[in-house]
Length: 241
Image (cartoon, rainbow, N blue to C red; front, side, top):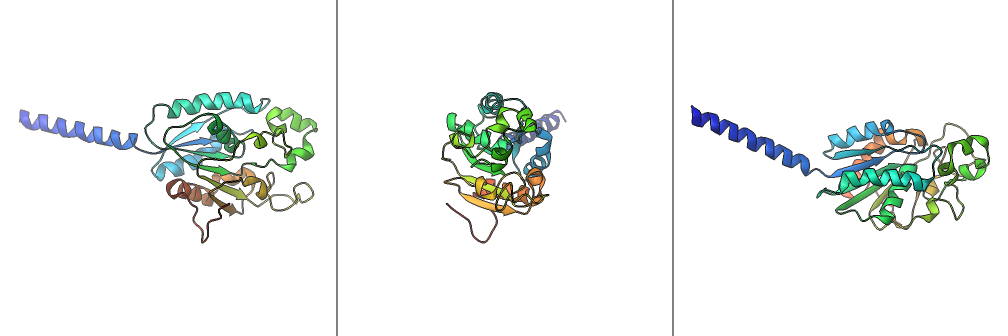
């Protein structure tokens, strides 16, 4: 009886260690939300990625009234805490400003076991929306980071390097209002489709969704996990530039 008890304890301990090892081996996805939002906007995507077998870390930051550089300091500390001791592959997914912060972080920090990156509605080329409203009182209230997202040569997006990592771009082309006079061409209400692209991108996918709803859209979530797993989106022909 005593030997049986010891055997059961041993088997239980080994099962626990095996489960713990499997959990530790999960690839990590670091999620960053966009301007003026909180990490809760990324909860649906977090839950989806967990179901797809990833371990997910949420970065949270305050953006109102701050510069990109100040925000990046906070973001960098959090990312380091999630990834510094990890031997697993580390992926990144960012919505809007979150995508630019990911690019800025990877410009200055070497992440061991870096995986793939997905940028969702990020203004990689800046947005004429900011050009148009930069001097308005309400955009000034948002702070320096909002004003830095224009299309001029000194804007925050224009300071970022060409990606050296596999990056998938998801853009929206649905707007709740007719804003052709503000943002010519297809856009998601805030960012032109053309401005989401970046030189050297691996793949591109377009969805009929507006800017704020992109990170919660079912198709966006499915395509995000597809790119993280396979380095491509699900469509008949990948767009490589």
